[in-house]
Image (cartoon, helix red, strand yellow):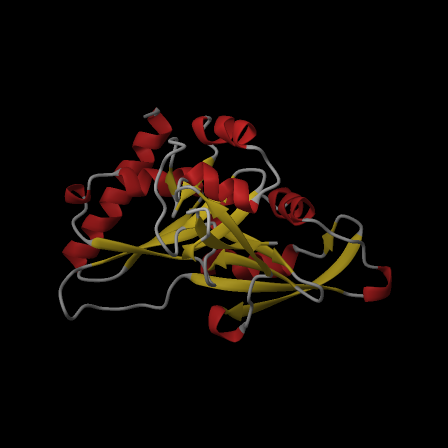
Length: 252
């Protein structure tokens, strides 16, 4: 573990202790996949209180850790999470903006990465999930993304109704191994998937997995750096040749 990773682990343990000692729910900043892996890999006995993850919608990639005491009654506060709804001022002259364009505009404002979560681009609006403390600042300062003039509105997560676009894919595999399921979802051979897995680019439910033969469970969320995400839905039976027929939900 690097010095930076150790500092993050210590910080997460400290947040869990605050939740326990103060009898309140305590939240971290947004955690990427590497940070979530540190969280999940930390022995549970080091945390004084339990945790869950939130990111503003179903199955986000970047998430906050919410530490809460195990007592039946404790002080609950609203999650420090809001959503920015970004739309072009004039749709006629709007560019086709990418995730990188929005990311660059936020960085140019001096906003550090841990203060905002997923950037979700739809046909009509872009949602950016942010910590409550910087929501108003970004909306005040963000007037352009690349060359497109934009307007911004601060919303609570309950005010949006976003469902990711998905594609359901079926396939047959000898066993529910990680590499076999990934080969069903992505147009890559097993030989090309192996370096991705062994190279530390594949996460299951936020935990780094480096074994090709890792056995998946129904509902597991798999993230492959540079290729996308999918949800393993489970086995639907066996084929005449004795293979398992599986279904996955690919986020597109």
